[in-house]
Length: 118
Length: 450
Image (spheres, rainbow over the protein chains, first blue to last red):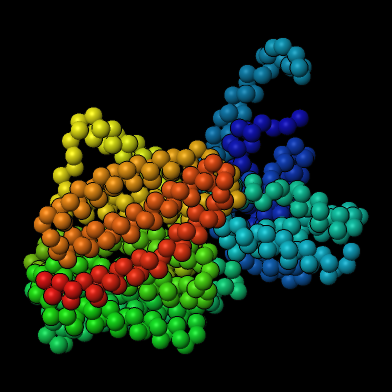
């Protein structure tokens, strides 16, 4: 099963902000975390993640700095800003509304088998 | 595979990334770090390092796609390319160029104000600046180009000699300010000196046809940059006027006696530096312009010929119309030159080559009509410096275009190669130089400085 492009695009910002809200991180680790969280279903490319990170930085939702953690390479770390946290809260409110609505609708329809007709 | 071989692959990969204008150095670092993490992760899974590298690169996806994504996010970077790029080894060199350019531009700006120390006011009457203007800018541009090429001492001597000759021609002759000779010098000397700049440009390999074609390209791009800088300058002046007048200060004196002359000559040097620093950025404009205007001019000229045929109305030839038709030939020649300069000599013949032939032939036909009328007129009324110059130009351009048409015809009929068309144009450059210098140096005494 693959998540559709539109859904990936819509969920990208809250997912990245959510991961960065846990702790500051860098590109490779963010991709690993996304893959881990989705059980490998969400497979982002580098060409998708890095421009997104740069856009969030331009918007002021995250900030970045090159850091050297002892025993590791110099890396560009991203961390969420106050404004980013506010943005994340707003995203979360919207998603909860959507998920709530879906949850209410779906039990009545029942389980739709894959490939079947509704 | 050893650690060293893996590092070599990373180095190579970095080089590929560096060639992408969309990816700046910090992006490259970030992506490389990512790549290294992927490789480490795959090695930890038990892959050999060369296998790990291959798979990691493959996962990252093609650089084309990657740069496209980055470009979408950072479209401003493509603009910055116009000014600030350069691979690391070239950076030092372009830094020195920048300093040399600044010195030359400052020199030009200062030199145009020096005659004022001797009582030649810039905003005063007289033709001094009209005939000498190019002499304050082009030697500096030539100096900058020669400094970059580092030719032999003889080339420097020749360049210096020619500029001195130009200064003599502009100032030594006893001509009146309202004589035809002064106007001819003012219009022809800059072009003659421009070809001296060409000498400096091609000084590293004067006989090479490619090098001369480079100079033709350089001229076109230089002109485009100069126009762009001029437009920006116009905006600056407009605001200077408006803002200072709003506080009751009249900036006229500063603008017309300082900003425009100094800025003008400095802009000529800066434009030359821009072309040198960014070869190939504007290069793309010349082919677009020629592709656009070659068909339009061809249709316009054909329509003109048909109208003459239908109406039976001859061309009213006087000096103004002759100059106009000279300019028309020059435009046709420029269309031809710039499409040649942008054309890949190996490309196959196409519709566009035929179109070019139509354009040149119709220009020739029109000019033949003009020339016949003009000759009759000169025979009737005698010669003046102006109509001799205009007629001479006409003949020089006509000869060029006639032979170019012949070569193009052979080319479109597959009986000749394209390089012959190109070589003809580059070989013809000295003819312009001879004619322009003849107008500047010989015509005035010939007509006793009328």
